[in-house]
Image 1 (cartoon, rainbow, N blue to C red):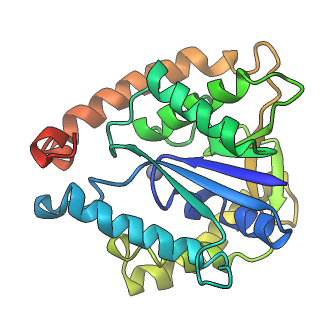
Image 2 (cartoon, rainbow, N blue to C red):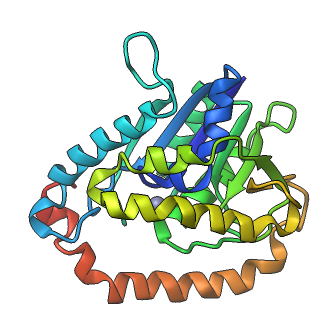
Image 3 (cartoon, protein in one colour):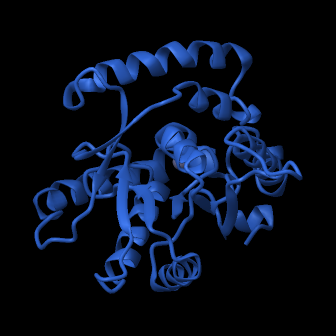
Length: 257
Ligand SMILES: [Zn+2]
């Protein structure tokens, strides 16, 4: 069996589906992870933005992936695929969609995990674009050959995978060293446990990673669309406006586009 995780940024998996990913590997599944961007703006320090932080983030992602398991040569079992778009600038267009569709066709996964961009708890434009791209790509596959699509960041969860090892999240996350600190890592584990404890509403005593399993039935996403679109435009605009400082210099000025 093959699992494909489609993420906007390195470290998204650590926050959303770490235990599921680990269990897939433990069951002997092949796991691929597509990173749509390489976190080119993953630092408040201008002198690090662009190529420098990208190099650091790619190495950190590799180190994090190793926490899930390595082969005999010490390489991570998770196959990381760098899609090559720029953090904060992931386009939502036909060209990117086609490239993603080709990748999915090559990998031919049984299950795909991606962000939920319809019932989304998270409105980062890169996450939303990743979710829509993955959703459309899977929807366009012949229903007989279509992989299961499980979406994270969803407030409309209907599919739960019990967590067998909650520590993997913090273990893998702590490898993203430029994004965290030893103290933060120490605080994170009890916080994660509390978070999952509170979220057990739908799963009873079991703590689990929650997803929305997509059925591709008509009207499945319609209810929230207008509200969501409003939220998106508001958020995307304020993200581009108020947070512009974070995303300056531009990719052109950094020489990465
Ligand atoms: Zn992200």
